[in-house]
Amino acid sequence: MYKVIIQYQISLARHYEDLGLSRFLEDFATPKDWEGMLNAIKDIEKSITQDLSIMNASTLVQIDQTLKKLDGDMERSYQMMNEPKVAQQARLQSFESQYKTECFEGTQVNVLEQIHAWIVSPGPEHMYWLRGMAGTGKSTISRTIATQCLNRKSLPETTCLGGTFFFDQNQGELSAAPYLFPTLCTATADCLPEIRPEICEVNKDHSNILYESLSNQWKHLILEPFLRLESRNSHNRLPKLTLVVVVDGLDECSSGSDGDTVGTILDLITEASQLNSFRLKFLLASRPESHIFTSFDAISRSSTCLRTSELQKIEPSIGFEVPDDDITKFLRTKTRETTERHSNLKTDWPGEKALDGLKRKADGLWIYAATACLFIGDKNLKHANTVEKRLNHLLRENGDVTTPEGTLDAMYLRILKSSVMQSAVPEEMDDIRSLFQNIAGTIVVLCHPLSTSALGALLTSPSCNEIETLLSELGSVISMGNGQDSPIRLAQLSFKDFLVNNKRCIDKNHQVSKEERHSYLLKKCLTTLEETLNQDICGFADYGILQEDVPLNKSRSICQSMSNILVCTGLSI
Image (cartoon, rainbow, N blue to C red; front, side):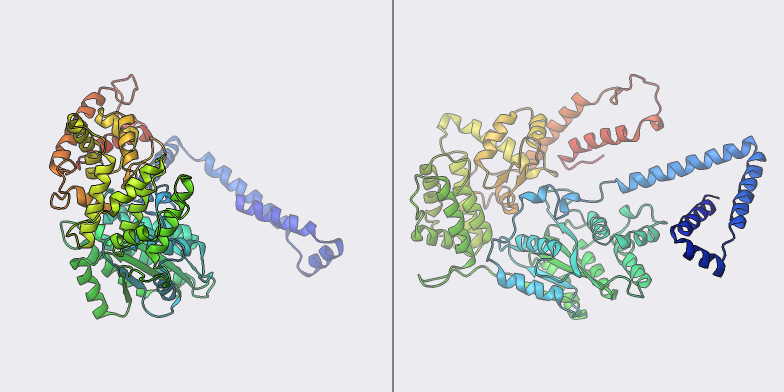
């Protein structure tokens, strides 16, 4: 009835919008049956009245039960959509991403140009594997490309960012493959709203898709919605689009007990070659670990959908008239920024000899250059002589260290000795060692990063102030973010690898035993549970309340709190 009434009102409004002569000619040529429309409305109203009059009490009860069932179905759908299977931190514009860096201006130009050429290429390669050893800048390049696609910088208007996922083994959901395709699905829906109805239609019979296999998730969340949209777009209502998907850190994706998870993901992504008017292009970055290399090698031998590129160490520029290499450009700019903050430093500090020494120490690795600049140029340093001491500390000879990993380890040791133990007297050594183990040791083994306030509440001792003091001294390797409620994160994964490997970290004061730290955390978590769990934890003051009567948001909040406590030790509920 409402439909007929609206049609009648629209027709009447449009009719009287026209000029009098136009209305007359229109009525003459195609007269409208105004009386018939009114009679139709009256007939529908009469029919509804008759239907309502014959409804008995049982019919109304049945309607009420149906509505309750629908309400329950909607609630379950809401719960499914709000389950933590979408890793918001993996997205480019997440809160955590604001602390991540992009390529320094004027560096990595050749690599960025190669990836741009692949993005705009009409060729069959929809997968690009960027591989390189740790510290060569893979993640920074991935983030830079993602930002350029988001802003369409030097790219066609028909190219956009389809989604990102930055794997990180330090964070539970960012190392788990089941979060990958749901996260990319939500990102593509944001980028291309026209695909949302297709996603809903494909998954109407898959209410548990977030918990199904990787194959089903790929099929129902990514591939089939795009194939359906292509079919519906057969008349080219939408332009041909290229959606670039950036997946970084494949080597940090945890493998399931049932096989090679990364290999499964790569095999599924090859199926994107079925798309025509919509192109999904995947930029994939990782270390060249053997199982990943094997999977890519199999793809390259069986299809033409893959392009590869290997990041090499930056070769240092030699000679005074030779243009600066990328790392030298970076070091020169960052040390200049430090000079501007300290008026007592000479204007040409640190000088070409010191820059050349830092460049040799970096040995072509961005991770060394970036960490060294954070250490030397720490904004918490108030005195220029402390800056000079830190620079000289890094420039000391490493003895027989010749490998990039050895150079990095030597730098980490010097940072730890300068920051943690520099002013300690023998009587304080045990206390400082315990403080370091309880704070830094805990941070490196956590499954999920905690904030300063959360870590202080969990550990009870040391205090939040002691945590902040130690972490401010370790700012070049551990980031506190902004304020006590920001998550504490390792600046580099290699720092964790260094601390937990006693063959690399040869200073026993700083060696971290994962087994000891997990045991320590378990005790702290159990203590927290013992102090937290109690009757009427929801605060209802009614011990007879039924479980189904507990509000969903309250139940979810309590479960999440308990889960956060236990997940610190790798347990789950």
